[in-house]
Length: 211
Image (tube, rainbow, N blue to C red; front, side, top):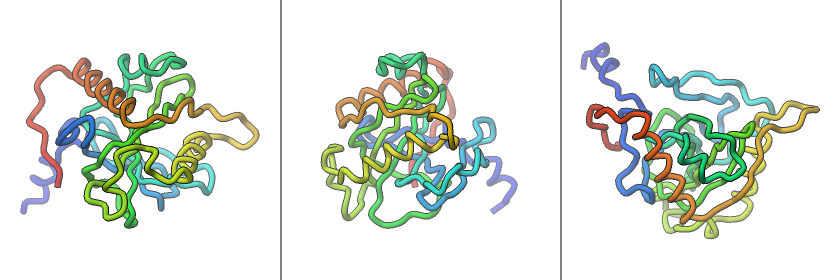
């Protein structure tokens, strides 16, 4: 295999992958960071490669795999579902994925099943976090609703996203305004898919499927 040609043909994880086989229930998630990462990585929107966004400010790490849904965008339609938001954050839709077996590698694609989400505001912007389980997971694959997950897991997510940008001695700029089940999560996913098409209406190369 020609390494240069392989590099050129690597699909952009935001634009070059599809959002899932059966959206809004079954999605693809591109994973940027794992529960083991003390550094927050984020996909560079131009190149599609992971880069260091910032070191985590505290010892807290995300309690789940964390990434985004390809071909989604948080813009006007997503903001309209968040009554306290001034606007949406303009990024792909974030997603947290629960896996019974530890996955310590990022820059990967997972097939996931949506069960709920967190309505989060970050500096006044809608920044929802969809919650999903790994498809085929021996423990969590049967879950269809957020209420089927242990409450402690959701509490950890709420705490992490409420404090992950907080500076010592200063109030947090982010807050969780609601915790919701699948029905609302589906509306957020569909809104983010529609927001993406509204901004990127031109036909793109056929997206690649999952692995």
